Amino acid sequence: MKSKRSGSSKKGANNSLLFRLNFDFGNGRSAKIHVKEGDNLYRLAHNFAVTYKLGNQMINKVWNLLQHTAKVLYSIFVTSNLSL
Image 1 (spheres, rainbow, N blue to C red):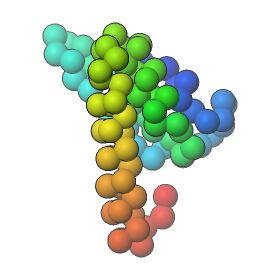
Image 2 (image 1 turned 135 degrees about the vertical axis):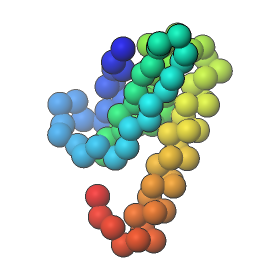
Image 3 (image 1 turned 30 degrees about the vertical axis):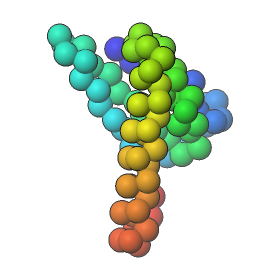
Image 4 (image 1 turned 180 degrees about the vertical axis):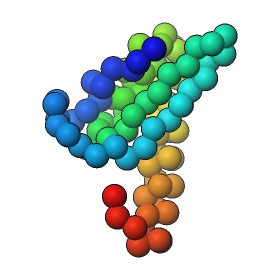
């Protein structure tokens, strides 16, 4: 299953991929969220939860996971003087 990219801030923009999260739902079901520069993390989480029928309580859990991952990766890049 492919997730919808409706959390993107600029439709059709070629923004750089920042990271990808893989989700395994079990029973052979899996999905990915691709996070690109400029994406709205809450909208990505909301659309992901709706698309995969995860329920409203999962929106904040997915959103928190996206925020945490973004912060950790940003911290690694800053402390390592790396560039995207």
